[in-house]
Length: 283
Ligand SMILES: NC(=O)c1ccc[n+]([C@@H]2O[C@H](COP(=O)([O-])OP(=O)(O)OC[C@H]3O[C@@H](n4cnc5c(N)ncnc54)[C@H](O)[C@@H]3O)[C@@H](O)[C@H]2O)c1
Image (cartoon, rainbow, N blue to C red):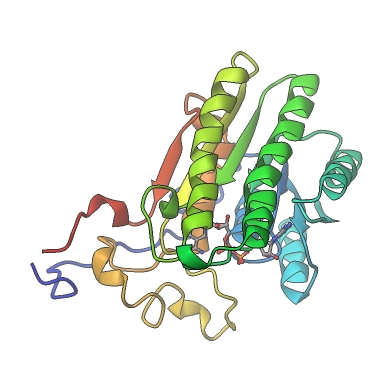
């Protein structure tokens, strides 16, 4: 088989607006907190949740023009948008973020753990400081955000949804991804324990494992090229969908996991990678 040769078929097209191509109001009245949501995948999750009737708390470690765009997009959809600046790796900031969110929204129905600052380093050059940084926010931070959200959901009654963004790196190694891969594999394992320990509460805990997702900040005229030529060109021949993923591809799965449609899905890690992991070693 010649990788990257003529596939004999079309690429799998991205979905349009929202799940099933339209606003379904799957989250009417829900209160969702999304970490690392000023831009990228988190920003798109905030938009899709708002399109489906949720009020959204937007967390990030920094506030910039992208953060303003995300907040404005949620408000334009007629939903409440609140800003919660915090480093999710720092316990006092993390707890303040939840206190502020609960004060603004009164309850929490959905948490999406998404924030990350990844650093890729060859194994032989790993530094303890890098380990502490990545494990500190992207694993410890996710665990303790999940714990706080779960405890609030139990207090409230009525269950809840906790979604963590993992990665294809949790299943396979790429060069220089030791710490990132360990962090993401840890998340897949985390949701197993949460599903078991939170049994009977109505809370579900699941991961989404994205493949190559074009989360670059692009100008409006570049936007139609998102996920297309010029993004991960080397990888596209290995992806059965024959395109890079869009933040909306991940947001649509987050919508499903956040909604009542997924009430019997728990402790699971769902690949959203255009089929990347389905392929083995190239011929
Ligand atoms: N883009 C991809 O191809 C891809 C693939 C697999 C998994 N993922 C995962 O998806 C998630 C989002 O990725 P993205 O591509 O949208 O990244 P991104 O860099 O566009 O967004 C991440 C956001 O997290 C924020 N952040 C970083 N550290 C933080 C902290 N300590 N506290 C609060 N906010 C913090 C950043 O400021 C940024 O806005 C991550 O968990 C990432 O590992 C992405």
